[in-house]
Structure formats: C-alpha cells, structure tokens
View 1 (cartoon, one colour):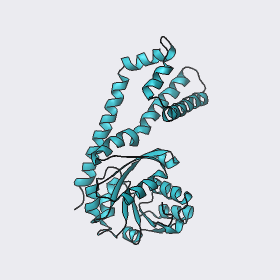
View 2 (cartoon, helix red, strand yellow):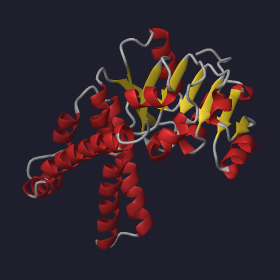
View 3 (cartoon, rainbow, N blue to C red):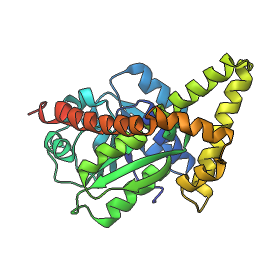
Length: 277
C-alpha cells in the first residue's frame, strides 16, 4: 500500500483509533490523516496520541482525501453522511459502520465513487481480528486491494461476493467473540466452584482457549478431527461431550448464530432504509 495515501476518518472512536495506529505503525505518515468527530475529547485524544489533524466538520475532513473511512455508529450514520453530501471526490470510501448497506451509504453520501464495506470484529483492536469485506463488482481491483491492505493492518480478511453474506459474517466473527467469552466465563466459574483458585481457573481457561485456537489455525486437520483426537473413548473428554450433546448445545449454538444473522439483517433495514432521505 502506498504510504503517501491521504486518509480521512469520519468518526474517531476505538475502531478508528485502532486503524490509525496500525497504519501509522506500518509506515503511513500521521500528517496524512484527518479525523472528524463531534466529541472534543475524542478529537484531542487522537491528536495527542498520533499527531493527526482533527476537525468537527465531516466534509472538511474528507476534502482532498484519497481514502475516506466511515467509522461512525450506525444510529447516527444517516445524519453524519448526509452532512457530507454531495461527498467530496475520493478514490475510495471504506465503511466500517456495522449493518449499513452499500446502497444506503451511496444514497446518503450522494456519490458515484468506489465503496467497500468492512465488518471487523473487536479483536481487531489488538491487531488479531478478522474483517469481512464486500464491494460491488464495479469497484476497480485497485480499490479492492487498497481496502484489503487497510484492513489487513488489524488482522486477517475474508471477502464475500454477496452483500447479504455480511449478515452471517457479522453473526460468526462480529458476534463470535462473545460466544467464546461465554464459554470461557462458564469454564472459569465452574473451575472455581470445584475448588480451584480463581487466578488458576482463569489462566487454565484462557491458555486452553488460546492453545485450541492456535491448533485450529496451524493444523492441517479440521476442527472436527482435532476434537476427535482429544476425545478418547471412555475418557474424561468423552464424558463431557456426551453431556454437551445430550443437552443440545451444538444445536443451541447453531440457533444462536442464525439469530444473530437475522438480527443483523433487521438492523440493516432499521438503520438504513427507514432513515435518511
């Protein structure tokens, strides 16, 4: 990615700060960043931390930028983007706004430019997340590559070729950390209930989760095979798996993911088509 790209951020929250930090660490010049946010404390925090230019004017931030990253909350997206319309010319508009469809972004911005939607998850704040990406077929390959390069600064990326598939992306990776946190919460609490020291229970749970994730990432075997290897017939893991399956846990997890995807679709309609001009 060209280190001289000029960036504008509309919204200066945690995800914006993470991306700015990752891009600057990767060699981008902080003087090429301009951030708009209505909150003076947010603006000052970003200026002090990164030395970027700040403003409370969305259109002013975007003017002259090569890439405009839309990072406001979905509840205020319509107002924030319409405040910029017609949007200043930019090579790429990259939206990390959860649930707002490309057609609504384009309508509010009043632009014919390239738009890419990105759905990062919270581990991206630590540089170890994953982002789902989508753009219309008309978006040039160079803009796809630019968007991918930006989001790779905070972790892995996965493209989908249908915008509707960002709803299951949201359900799997966007909401996914909470599923693992719940499992870890229960494991830790149960360990404590069985007599383990709280710190030991926490460490055992967290390191086990980290190790299992690394095995899944680095092994050539699928997760089902990895699970079977750990599950010796008649052993402790087999006893645990029997309880989980008899209580319908696999089905409950699948139902939870489907419910999250359905809610993502509902929110897209609520925040998108029912708001703005």
